[in-house]
Length: 110
Image 1 (cartoon, rainbow, N blue to C red):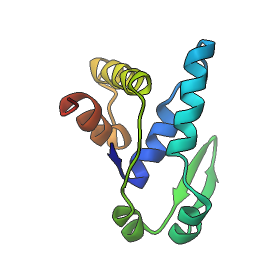
Image 2 (cartoon, one colour):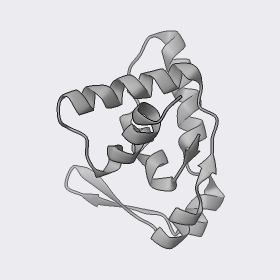
Image 3 (cartoon, helix red, strand yellow):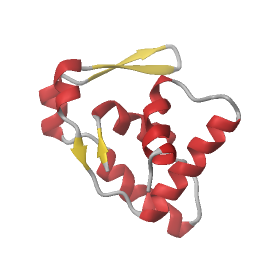
Image 4 (spheres, rainbow, N blue to C red):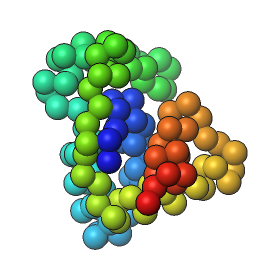
């Protein structure tokens, strides 16, 4: 699936922190795939800035837009993401970070 930098970062935040053993293996693999490489971090001038109990990410937006990648996403992880995004939609809690993911994983996914 073609994912942009900001979508990959949103997926890292969206993926569950707890799951059964087999699920955690898939989630850990997905986190490795979605994570930024050292080269991407350097190229984007990526920086995490603490703001209270949250982190704000600073990066070169123009470069980030041009760095979309086609990443392999397992069927199990895809279904997990679809479920999590559908739950957000049902609760009316989609936001700027999850909107495009909802379109890719739920609306247009085939």
